[in-house]
Length: 120
Image (cartoon, rainbow, N blue to C red):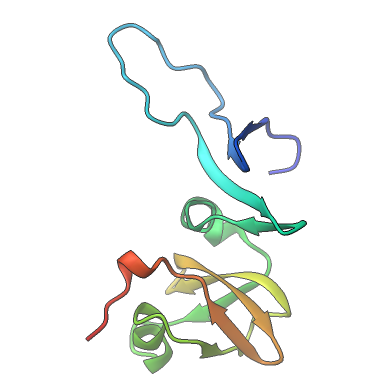
């Protein structure tokens, strides 16, 4: 994403689309992908960033659909890191992004949005 145009919107950042949308008869809610926000002097990536570009991340945790960590992740639980290095990472299931988390000390802290969690 280096070199891509980024727009500042409030305390957040948007990755701008490569082409302008025609303005005629369109009501654009948000043009671009939310990248993240500045919080307490640090950058926190947005869930949408991981969903859009997670498969391209170099630091990721690879899961399978049969892996019990997948269900734990979808419930909002912290999971064991087997492939991810410390720092922000994408969580992938069979190559498809589920979101992102922060790996530290062999664990990945879940940053999956609470509204999307499967609490069963």
